[in-house]
Length: 135
View 1 (cartoon, rainbow, N blue to C red):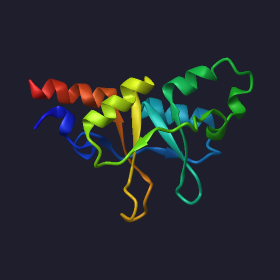
View 2: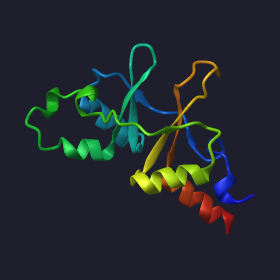
View 3: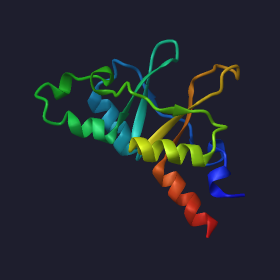
């Protein structure tokens, strides 16, 4: 099987670390540093996806004088690019390449348990790892 034909579910990093909109930025930064995370999903009270905070989102707010008072909602990116777990790596690579995106959020399929919930993340490093394995 070609790498491009592999399903995202077989390559993605399962599980997504989440925060609520009112979580302080400092707490999110600590979580990201301690768990070696490149990002955290921001989830609403009903479990709905509100946004995502990447390392770059953290870097962008470093100069703000009120950094201590900022919450997840203040710095999250709400422009989310999502794909289903049954999409192919080829499709994911195309989306990432065209949008200059380093990670895609993988949402559960509609009609499967609690649909449209984050179930994983696919990073460019996950794709690189697959290319390396293909040898």
